Length: 286
Image (cartoon, rainbow, N blue to C red; front, side, top):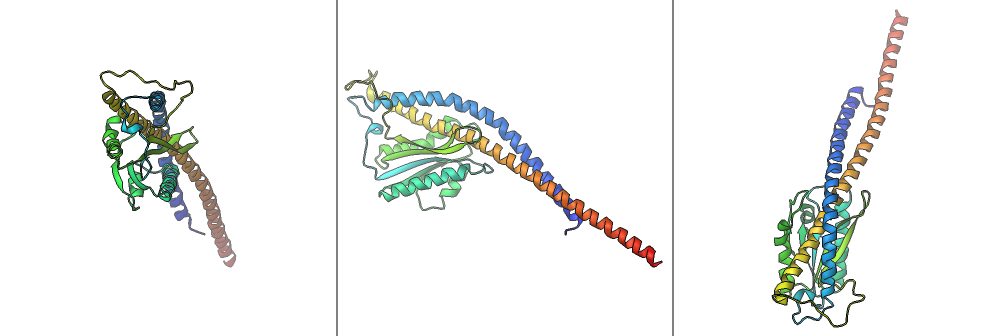
């Protein structure tokens, strides 16, 4: 059995760790509320944009934008959103697992896979693999901005426009609730039709000044809004996962402290009993 001094040192160390995990839990809880609010504000705009763009795929315009044209998928691009920091449970691991499944699936179909990585953890993980990384960005903080994502996303859009990519997918953690965050996969390009029931067979919007100019700007804003929504959802998921992970760590630290305290009491009692036995034995000898 270890000595009482060693056990006291261990208890003090665990208590110090528990204070840190409790502090991190409170910080994550505070940041999660703000991240959830930004997520709620981003979702309606992104969904409305998605509906409008989905209608465009069923229109019959004179100008057909490259982002609306379907091609045989010989090259696939994946935009993977991860966190910059760890201590978020299995959040990143689940996103990476889903990404690897997608990579194997498309590679099994004979397609070449390229990556665009948002977040330090994703870059650290995927650069060890023999997969081309066309663009990456990190250190977006707890409040990502669209302007910080435009350059990275544009690299993938230019590659698609140039015919170097035939599919573009977005992979990120989707916030379901505080206890549940799951990896989500969304096809960005080519844009898929949505909510087409009730639409006329031959119809189109009226564009001013011209369809090419309007569609190019509109589709760029749409894609940026989808990636921004994914980044905001990922932040909310990160804070929720970190809050749960730090609470579990604090609870486990408390259990460990109780166990160490019990061991300390037993060791202290054994030491006292030994001293009493020595005193009684000495008195009997005299």
